[in-house]
Image (tube, rainbow, N blue to C red; front, top):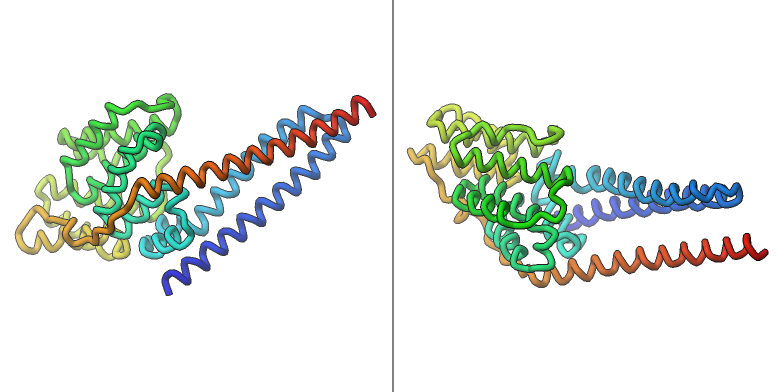
Length: 309
């Protein structure tokens, strides 16, 4: 039932994506003909860039609406994982695979996948910082501060290809917050980085962090109240399951819980996943090159007619 629903969701997303792509390209072609006939060649060049930007924005909107919101707003991690798996998205984005596995509760599988991906040089060269940031976040959620410290240390030691980008600066700010938390500044975890998110998953994680902060300060009653709430609101996510685990530990008079044992451990072959990802990326690049070649041939034929016709 779950896979059937997941397939329907992805089919709807794909059909909308194809429709948006066709409409955008149709508008692009009609506009191109107009600019060519009018002699606005510079406008044609700008139109190409605008077309690419619009497609990216619209595709991002569709992804958020039909796929990402399953986790971000509905907090339905099992369905989110079903969509990713049934649509074959694991091979298109190893980090998406890692995320969907973690939030559904496959903690060891997600974390081991991240660690294995870091050993693949071609992948780590461009994605090490994002992978290490996810490892820091995921290990914090399961309460492994030693692993959080290790992820932060390796983040500092790894080279960022474009360290001046907004994305790189946000990643660094997140790591700095974890480092301050490890040093005893618990409030650092709730300091916003860039534009504040408003989705339900973000609010759930913030509440969970507040519970962890209360627990670290010895305020067990406050922690209990927070975890009781996150256990219910996030019951279909790893955060909700961790909240239940912590509540059980508090009920037995313990401040510590061993969460990994309660979660399934599904092994993941990172090499196969990366090979599939590389092949998918190669196909996308080839399709782009073919499109550019066709466009270049069209331009050449047009200008040949203008010059010699």
